[in-house]
Length: 497
Image (cartoon, rainbow, N blue to C red; front, side, top):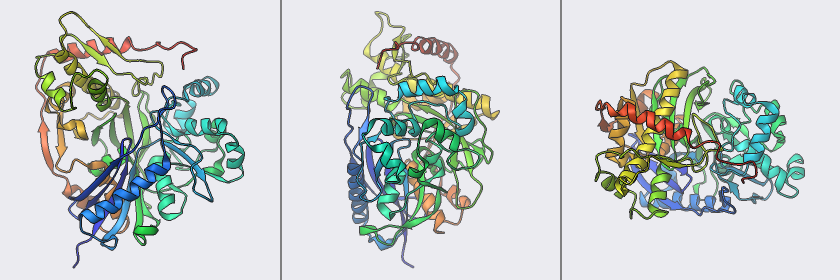
């Protein structure tokens, strides 16, 4: 019998990729292409939606060709995507009506303050599981409706479609206007309980319902692709971090993963009942497979981790490449009393302070660039601990193991320090591309390529493990870290942009 495969499109913050997987969950081929970041003003971050689509077409064709396959060798196509990034386009022509507003964009800060003042801080969280912040899609869409000439009238007339990147790609691939529950749960507009758009939230945000996509499960056939991929079922979609949770086979309550990339995202499976966090976490959809009950997750989102290493490289010029930071950090035994809180665009979980800005605390004449490098790496671990503590408080479940993935997991010094700080084992799988793997798993389940979650669990194999070394200085360091965090807030004045 001829071997068959599943393809996954991973449209991320920095690049678009296509990976092809076999039945064992092994990577057959990878193609990747970076895209431009557009910065119209400080704090504003955009992408060109058409550039994203063209790049997706290119990498998909290249991945198939590199594997020496034909499109007919693929049983399904899944999508994972950067979440919250917001696109609006013409229903008839498909022409974008503005650049995509990226999830990191902060132009809605004043709008969010107004919403919180008008409705109170718990209004949105109690319905959607999310606080009203610049992070989510709803305020970005409201900004577009208020600031793009004629857009609101055209939207109300049904001429304009809204979507996160998954919707944009599904529409381009199949002509259908859909999203999945995980992406919809990141908009600030979906009811956690009903898994449908919430009319009260739409009214609060002043968003016309007619422009929103239909919400579907994460694993079902949305339609058949057109064009070069004609006939291939588009059968899975997950926000990238939920895709990583799925790809890490965290299918049972209490199982958790953290993806270390530009930012870092820690998700814990919470089972079939949504619980609204009291500790600054997000309540989000983990996944829904077909008609099965949905599963929910707690999420702690950290805005700046890998991006801090890039800043250290590009803005300060203290290293020539990202991997060099580990070598530099190993030139010293500790951080020398120096702590770096990278609140470049505010603090995300569990603080949610848009008024925070980054600080380097504890500087003395003793500090060298080696100490700074170590402080940069340690910031990722300290931020992770803040999230884990909030997660344990809200869930009542103690973390036994943390499954990790993403580019920063190649840094052994960081991973060992992370295990020490959390006091749990940190494990990395053989297939580190868990975002793409999760999207492939969802699509493959939808078409029967894999029989179920037990088969997917059997595909997971450990590549590396870091066990905690009980160092007495850890608790003292964490106290110092929290002092440094306290010094980041109340930085912005009312007239600051």
